[in-house]
Structure formats: C-alpha cells, structure tokens
Amino acid sequence: MKKYLTCLIAVLLTLGVFAGCGGNAGGGEKIDPNRTQITVAMKNDPAEKLIMNAFKAAFEEENPDIQIIVETTVGTDYVQTVFNYAVSEFPDILWTSGDYHSTVSAAGKFEDLRPYYDRDIPDWQEKYHPASMSTTKINAADESIWFAPRDFNQLVVFYNKNAFEAAKQLDPSIKDPNDPSYYENGRTGWTWAEFKDTVKKFRALQLAGSKGEALTRNSVAVLGGFTWNVSSYTILRGFGGDVFDEEGNVVMDSANAMRAYNEMIEFVKNNYTTSNNAAFNNKLAAMEFGVRTNVISMEKLNFDVAPFPIMEVPVIGSGCSGYAMSASCEHKEEAWKFLKFIISREGQEIFGQTKASVPCLTELLYDEDAAWRKSTPDINNDAFVARADDALNLNFASEVAPKNQSAVVQEYNNFFFSLNNEKKYQTEEGLASLVSSYMKKIADAANAA
Image (cartoon, rainbow, N blue to C red):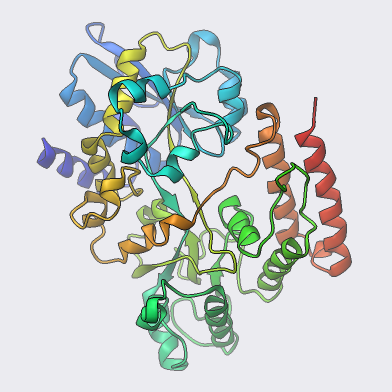
C-alpha cells in the first residue's frame, strides 16, 4: 500500500490542479449506501486538496466500510462560515487552525477530543509537539483538545539560490543565509541584524540596475508578509513588544512595540519588501518569509531554506492546522477513527509525502528517514524545526473572552494592513495616531459585552 500511495501522491503533485477527492470532492461524489459517510469541510485550496486526497485514499483503503466525503465549503471568514452551517448540513469534521478555532470551540460547535486522546493515545503529551498541542486550547487554563493538530509549522526564510550566487559575484561580502559562519562557536543561525544587512546589500544591487533573478530594479530583497499575522506578531514579539500585558491591558504603544512598527516602516519605505505575494515565485524577491506549505508552489525555483533570524527576544512564529469534530456528529467513533489515522505515524508519513508540511508527531521531526524530509532532499529541512523550543504561539488573544477573540484578531490585522499600506501612517505623527486608534479598537473588541 505504501508504494501505491507514494505513486498516487506523485501523480497529484504532477497534476497540480485538483477537482477534489476522487475527482468529486466538491459535493458530487456518489454516496455508497453500504458505507458510513463522514463529511469533511475544508478550504478550497490546492495544498489542502492535495493533503486530503492523500488522507482519504489511504484511510478508505484500510477502512472500506467508511466513506470520506469532502466539501470545500470553508470560506475566508472562518468563524462566520461555521456559524452559517445549518444544523442538518453541519460537517462531521472541519479543517481549522490554532488561531481560528477558539470562538467556535467556546460556542459548543466542536467536540472536546481530550477523552478520545486519553483513551486511545495515553502518551499523547509526549508524542506530539507541545507547541502544536497548545494551539488546540481556548486559553492557557483550558485542558480540552478542540481539534486534532496535524502539523508543526514555524516561520522560515526561503531564498533564491540563483539570486544569491549572482549577488555574491557582484558583492562578495553577501553571505548565503545558511553560511557556515552563522553556526560557528555554538551559534544557531543568523541574527536579525545580519539578515537586515543582507537585505540592504541586495537592495543596493537592485538599485544599481543589476541583472538576474531578483536583482533587477523592480525586484525587492524580501517578501516579508508584514500584514500576515505570523510575520507581524513574530517581529512584534522579537523586538520585545506585545498586544496585551499579563493583566490584559493593551500595550501596543510600548517603546519596544514602536520599534517593531518602525522597523517594518523602514522596510516598506525603502522598498526592501513588497505586498506582491507572488514576488518570490516570480523571481522578483530574493527571499520570502513563509512556512513549509509554500514548498508546493516553488517547484520551478532553485531555492533553499534558512531558519528565521534570531531576534532580541528569540521567538519564531509557530502554529498548526488540523481537523475538529463537530459536536453534532452522528458517527463520532468513525470520525475519530479518521482523525486518529491522520495523527498516527502512518498518517503523518503520508502527510509528509505531500511536501505540504512538517508533521506534529515529535518522533518524525528530526528523523532523517521521515517522509517529509525525503520528499525534499535537496533543501535544508533542518530549518523547519530549527530552534523549535523558541516556537511562539500566535494566539495573542487567548486570554480574551472566546466570543471576542476573532474580533480582536481582525482589528489587529487591520492595524498592520494600514501600517504597511497607507503612507500617512508611516510618519512619527501618523504612526502615533494609528497606534492610539487601534489600541482603543482592540480594547473595545476585547471587552465587548
């Protein structure tokens, strides 16, 4: 079966376009009345379809009495999508992630999986990475498990190897992001200062009208994704700032937070970065902040991966996605059987073959023979698990009332969008005004009745 699945995944990767599981995952799959149906709702996303195709094929081969019916009905507004489901149409299993689920979990839409883990995987606390498991909770005091995490995703730096080779010919002081000197004398990678120095040197070459991938005038040094909460919150915390303090007060105007904002503004104003999300894949950015899933879209690039730069506070944005079980699921044991398969070693190895992410099963993170590493043998896979102890839980609103968390996150995202896209806020006076305005918005959202 393993050989069959490897061939299946290879075919899916080659095709690159997915109509859905079995070719009919969008809702047209024929129902087999002799099997138990479990519906799975997921995003209409190529990587997600690839992953679910792999899980579905392997699970159904081992469990011919259960049919997995996949629906691509999860919209961009996750919480609203879930609350819009009619009771009679509520899926048995839903894709979710650590920064999406809290409001829905607290509303009773999801089944607490802790009893299933305790019953069938009593050593789950040792088996799965704690950073991934922590995201399954509503807050730090919560002992429930509201979804089964499938991956360990932390921020890394992708870089164009052709661009760096050409740049080093023009400026020999430029170092490769994985240069051995960054690992000498006990070091664990490059620092933010060294990363920024590389950015500046690349920009100088671009302004000089150099030729080559990511070296032309219309190129940038890095696709930083500063409006993406994984990047923005990592940088905010890396400079010593935060959104809330331990008492729940909004502290986005702290001196360290302001330094983080000004760092992002410097990158934007000097065209070190861009809002064009396709820049790296189109060879118009030398580097990109991203996660393992990005690998799927980089097949045509000569690229490698480096750990995220070490900041003043050594944190790396880390999150995970996975699958929750509906509290109203009629066939809970069958649904759990599918979830348990996904998080088993077999399921995690199948997951690894898709190239889409790093498994959350701890024993596979550093195993050189793990499928996720073998699927990309020519890149620095260690970067995806480097300094894993520095993993930063991205749910900064976890201590806010669950019903208000999504509103807080939305205001946070709006703040960083304005910061990075509206020039009037990229001055000292404009920034102060923006911070003041959003501190009130976030506080109001957090304290809403």
